[in-house]
Length: 260
Image (cartoon, rainbow, N blue to C red; front, side, top):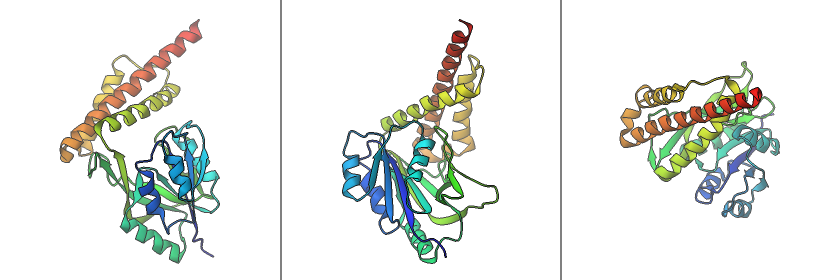
């Protein structure tokens, strides 16, 4: 017998501006919504509880661990994971309703994700199709425990089935919000880099930053996204520079402790 029920998971922190649209898009698609909130101080939790979500609060130790914790709280075999600033497009909703009617024939499903920059859809800059595994049978797949750039992992024998329609990801409402989010992620990434390396040269952060800019602006077509593409590319430079600079300081500090 094919499974037809879905549990949704959403991780949140101060998302009162976006969470209702996210939850609305899950209507009639899922049988339960599990929210793991990182102690929001706005109305996020209140909104989620008023919509019948099962809400748990837990400090964010890393995105992969938080997503996997949310998955562990689900009741159903198939899990659909969204961020609070993501919405299922009408086309994707229709595809999922059809899947539910027929029953799931695959263990993992892949979606395209259309990212928005300050309200504008971005079709290049490495932001589209930005394929994501977001619906999966939790007996055969789960989240890795990376602090950033987390993803669903599964056995090599499993082949994802692509589903028509997009996840709409409203990454930021302003340039300031985008910068703050990217620099926060850079701080997390710096610890990951420092844990994997024994040394970072003085010029390495600048070289890595330049590579990130060139990759985004030219390699991934950011030049085709106009002003948005330039802003995204420059932020890739700044975030990468910051991540490697912070990692270098962490490594040097670690070395001093060892030699003392």
